[in-house]
Amino acid sequence: MMPDLKSEKFLTVLQAHKGIIYKVAHAYCKDAEDRNDLVQEIMIQLWKSFENYNEQFRYSTWIYQIALNVAISFYRKESRRQHIANPICEGILNYADNTATEETEESISILHRFIAELKELDKALMLLYLEEKSYKEIAGIIGISETNVATKIGRIKFILKQKFLNVKQ
Amino acid sequence: MSNSKIMEDKELINLWKAYDKKLEETLSINKKNAEEITKLKVQSFLSSMKPIKVFTIIIGILWILFVDGVIFIAYQAGGIFLLISALIQVILTKLAIGIYIYQLVLINAVNINDSILATQEKIARLKSSTIWIARLLFLQIPVWNTFYWTERMWTNGNIWVYMIHIPLTAAFIYLAFWLFFNINYENRDKKWFQLIFNGKEWTPMMKSMEVLAQIEEYKVEEEIIAG
Image (cartoon, rainbow over all chains, first blue to last red):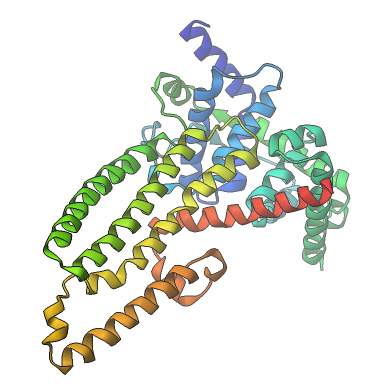
């Protein structure tokens, strides 16, 4: 692929799947500035891997795999890159909060909080489950068997349910 | 949507969909900044860690050459304490260099396109192996108190030489071995552990040990399922 075409194709893919990058970064990074760094790092690694993208997978699966791998190991604070965005305050992904019913907003916020409390690998499983990925696909991304995916998701859902119940009480 | 309803699986997914929809409507990509990424000559995932590892290995090899020289001179001169101290030191340094080489191998082996478990295990092993370097470092403590000893010091020395050096060295040996065997993930919550590894530079190591423990858990369950 010609460099310009490749870059254009990449930007189109990025545009279509920007939500995944945001959701992963949001789940793994509480601090807003760290989150911008994480988004940047994910995009850099996506671009680096774009040439080796295997067409047998969906773009969303490929993006999830790389985004989660980068996010889980994002504790490597010693190897920070320079910010691409200049001024820094403006990130690559910009999120403008808008209207959503108050109740839904509150529930989403609670769900985020519970997801944030999960361990790194469980968090990855839960994100993929919420994205309605099949157990087979999740098993491929995480690298465990489908049976193990089902067992673990069942367990995490149980914990989430308990937490929601506690909030209700 | 009430919290009680969220308990239902479908409701949980519907809530996520509502969040997704909201993101679709509100999330925008800064095209200019995104384009900048495609112009970068980017390093692979962990390449930024390589230079410091290579630098440390070079310094370590130079140090080994120096200590080997000291060993040779000590052997020729018959300085038994210096000889033994330098031998212990050089063996531990060689082991530490071995760990750095192992880390370089892991850096090259990490493939971000691999499954999460495979990739994270390599990264976590890479980062957590730093704890071995710390353990070896502590194991060296006693030799820094013995390398300057001479035979004459012990044969002609007064009682104070025995009174000071023997308990001091014994304490160092005890401390070195105690730290060597006790610096591990299981003791991460102990006060002494947090005192030693209390700095930002240790955060990646601590975090990676945490991830490694999760991976082990996943693998154990995988084995149980596989029967």
